[in-house]
Each structure stands twice: as C-alpha cells, then as structure tokens.
View 1 (cartoon, rainbow, N blue to C red):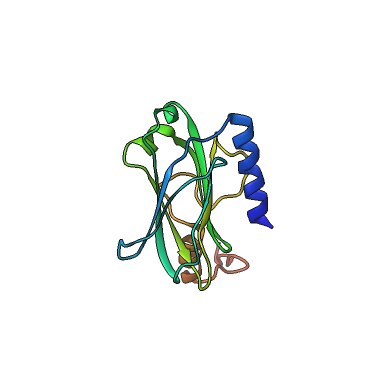
View 2 (cartoon, one colour; view 1 turned 120 degrees about the vertical axis):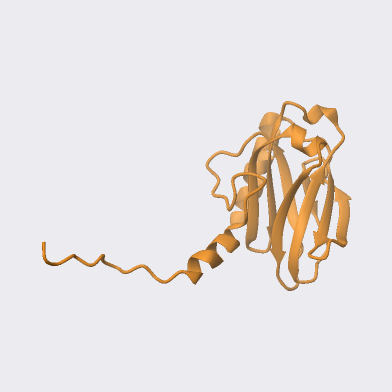
Amino acid sequence: MKNLFLAAVLFAATAAFGGVPAMSVVVSDASGKAAFKGATKANGAFATEKLQPGKYVVQFNSKNAALKGGQYSIVVAAGKKKVVANAIAGEKFLAGGVAMKVEVGAGLNITGQIAAGPMANVPSQTNDNTSRPRDQQESVRRSLPPAPDKMPVPTGY
C-alpha cells in the first residue's frame, strides 16, 4: 500500500512539475556486474526482471541538458525495502550520475521512479542521494542494548 502511495505522490509531482527526461538506469550486483541496463519510461518509472537475492546499486545518469537547474526525487524499491532521495540537483545526473543502494530479497525485482521537484511530507528512508537505507539504520539500532523503560533515579542527593 505504501508503494502505491509513493508512486501516486511521484506521479502527481511529475504531473505538477512537468515530465522528467529519460535517464539511463544500470543495476549492478555486489561484485559490480550489471544485472540490468535500461532507461526510465516517459513517466520516469523503470522495473527490472526478478533478481537474485543480494545487495544492488542502482545508477541513474543522463546527457540531457534539460535537467540543468531542476530538482528531482527518486524512489527505488525491492519489495518492502525502499530508498528515497529527495531534492537532487539535475546537474548530478549529468556529472557522473546518482547511485542508490537497495537490498533485494528472494523472488523480487527492483522498481523505481524519478519525479521532477522535491517530495513533500513523504516518509523516507533517506533524504538525499548519499545516505543509507532505513533497513541498515534499523540493523544498527537493533544491535544496541535496549533502553530502560525508566531512567534510574540517583540516590543520595
């Protein structure tokens, strides 16, 4: 359901701010081998075939000068695992591209969409193109000892 909500928000943003020029999409596995090469559709969306479980990097780039001066948002998902990048300068797609990491579970594919303009009020795992996914943050949080329900009251005061 959240995927549908995010897709609807991105579609609305694309309609409100105009279309997104086509971008090339390369998905590489942990060894750097390309698992998918393609381009975004007219609505900024793409989808891979089912992939082997593992960690992947999704790279977006373009040579279209129309991206200059614009801001863009990206959602990349593999099942329930999503990564969101917000307010990316169009020049980044022209100069080396934008990369996002996502972990893929068994029997899943990677889907994504690029929209013109920043997303507002969308819960995200990341808020830029260089931070790590929420699932990694959650694994760090889970590795910490649990916080006590109540802080101990110092005695002797």
